Length: 134
Image 1: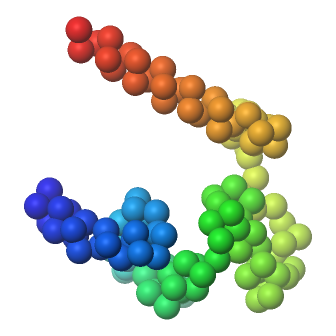
Image 2: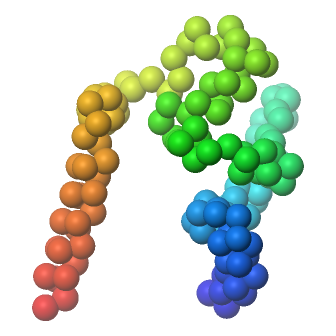
């Protein structure tokens, strides 16, 4: 906790100055670099792999792109990068839904209701938490 507080105190002014979402910045700094390096070092040695996710230069490029183009679902930035580097890959679906749950989530996303249901779920969980404390 002390280390996280120290990092937060150091990075928060930078995040605010450049309009970086606090959780995004913290995730990049504390999770991705370690996860990416660990994942590569633990991979099968027969696999040649490049993982750019701990590249500060790449983060700077990503920060120059409006947030609306970098959302998890229907990520315009990544699709454009693929279009430039290996367009044939776009002939295949990206993370297609295959479980009943993922198909339902996909449908709710397409009709614009997923965010509403997700928020409702969190609000109900919070109310349940408050009620359980009494």
